[in-house]
Length: 484
Image (cartoon, rainbow, N blue to C red):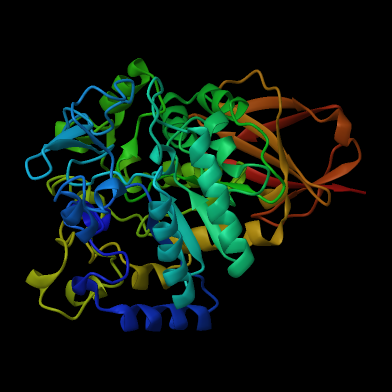
């Protein structure tokens, strides 16, 4: 279950997806196209079907018993939260064979590994080495805040966790330079900051709290959630970067909002109970934003211009839909819609043998939404996103520029600078469904030219301290400030 996060064998490919040689062929083909491939590295837990755990169940004398976390009662680590509240009643599960309780932070079918055991630490370095030798370009390390447990704590973000992760980074740097470690820690930015270390832990870390606040800000036409979360975001080492996203393969998690905000998000974005899962929302980007092109572009513009390296979830670049009637998170994991051909061009196999149901009806059906048709349409969402990414590549202020939010007396306007050594960008967003007029103090840039990066129009000179702008409903401007 859990789509492979319950690992039963760290050294093979699930037969539904081929074998190791198929995977090596994939990596080689990607590299020839100038693409890099990173994979998940599931450090925290295994499947209860893994041979380690099956051996561990035989009793305390078995050498694999200490690969997992056991207790004679279910009272230890009581301050640790239960993550999957809708399916799990406890972080402990009784095992009849071992006659003890085992610890798990996720599903009971996913027993946590015991990182206090040096053998476990060595095993996971061996796992990383195996896939790096095959040619992968790095790892998204799953659920890293939970590796260690200590009584009297919430068993998250413990110092011992960082000691081990620094060892993992050192091992990769020493033996496999130019590979990347991406941290999946659904925590507040001040806590994720620790996972960058002093530039010696993770290269990148997901910025989870930003994501729901983009949706909050758009729905409220109010920039304050965005300004608040960016104020909570600390500086990071020069060789590190945030990884930002609008959606991913899980539910739109609402762990990083308070209860009132969570209820509001559910009311606004998940009115049907089938749209809710755990502490989140299982919907894709386009349905969340009413399949409204202006809202979708606005959300992406925020993603592309705020600090961080943007991650786009497959299918969202063409506005794919979801299927809330599929179980668990599978509603946002339907086959990629490449064309209007058989099985949406995803596979030549019989339709009934596909891993998931196709979206084949309605406004999101693959006959309407697919890559091939959007590649041919210069005004498609796909081509708009490609253009945005090309603009980002050509302007280093987006990738390395510091963020300076500009004062504005209009709550619907988010105005900020992205300022690097070689470039200053002025970014404007109107979150309102109405045209907004506003004034910014640009006295610092008197005599500079403003160039629209999308329109590439003639430069407009900043000639007065107060500069007046007008933005149409839910639109944006990316402006280059060029000194004469």
